[in-house]
Image 1 (tube, helix red, strand yellow):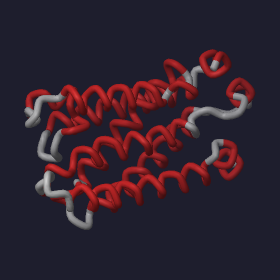
Image 2: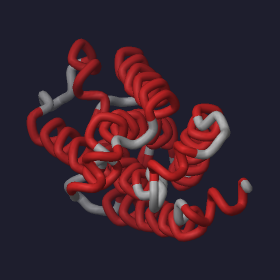
Image 3: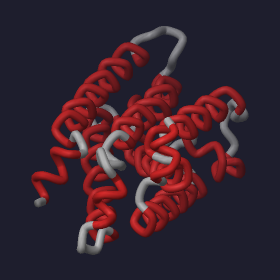
Image 4: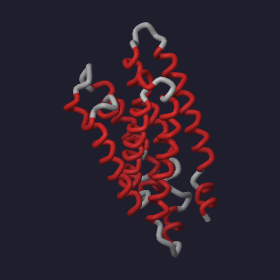
Length: 202
């Protein structure tokens, strides 16, 4: 049953996609850190902010089945499956991206990649529960894009609750924000699953 669930949600394809994102993140960090206009940690934010978004968008593909109503009609409790689904998907994505940053944390930012993956998956799961999996990619892309452009430069620690995508690992508020988004998404998705009506309209 577990294998069928994974296959029906495009699990193998998404895992392969996450590996591609991780490799591209590593290549981008390598290239940016070699540019003369970036000095060490200054090369970190673009990769740390954007790579987790792409991974989270891939996760959103797995958050709704081909027939969500049919799945819900099955005589089984779905919330433990949804809970495990999100936790495992987040762990795989965070580990894959963080590993690309371990080669030189001061440049790529393994901790930032892991934190932003947790937050981005949280945003995606919130959007899935409220608007449906077909639209779940939009809020995380829009939010991260706005923050990347609008956040104070240099970053200010007191704004970390909303500028978490571009904050360093040393900003506690950014971690709390990531945890809050992830917890909200986990609860909403585990309880409600993907919003069926929105997916049908897409």
